[in-house]
Length: 397
Image (cartoon, rainbow, N blue to C red):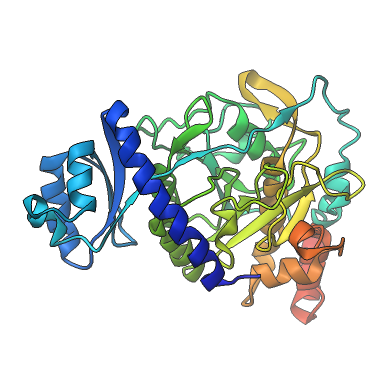
């Protein structure tokens, strides 16, 4: 479903509009954040010089970009390649504005679903898959509003390293919103989650209002790469994203990090990034308990697969539980399913496995390849000779 040319042409105009809009807003806001590209050895020299012009927020390690804040006058000089800024522009290949990312606004139900009515886990075959795998040894990064890692639903999924907080710039990435904790509980919570044996990491890039800068989201993906994550869940989005974000997703894809993202809750034919980047990202749409299209779920040609996203119960801040609806809830079902399958994957593509094992539902732009099926994913990997040996080992041991 990936069409680089089509995505690139759509994004080009959006990126140009974003930088012009950011420059205008900079009049009232005073400062704005830019993401600049610098090749090779130029990146280090440019970072040092930009530090004198404004505040450097990130010098990315795996991609040739720097994010920094400056006032509007300096931003205009850089964008227009003014002679007064030649010492900077001579080192810069491109300039873009850092977009604002947010959680796709979830719908909160007034009451809780019954614990015995976990239709979402039943529909995707989570219980059947867990007869052979609980996702043990798989490291999941939740790039979101943080996680309440002392919550009884997910506390056992954490080790000493909890993650990182890019909003507060510290190693205490606690959730002050609730969204990230809910997402984490779906991915691998002990009572309401899919991959109950996986290890969780909280990568906080959005604030208590569920909003944050794109530069921090990119840094969160780099942190996941540097700290050995196997899969990351991004139940967040924006209608536009920088080439830096696209490049880090491409880099992650080529270096074995699986990225799962929510398709978005705009309720129509809308692109939400990073889900709409295509091949490097597994884009997840939402369905209800009858596997019908959730009315809020975006319809877009990059949708890869669907998962339950209507009235899903999971952990919430304050040690509580909540029932939420959204593609944010659908994505971690896929993340958890991937975690169940990864211990048995020996070569091949996890994206292809998801597509081949999915339960067909209908139109590809709406549903992708269909409903994610954790049971079919795991049993498909165990169907060969090696798979039978693994089954025997688990029964005997």
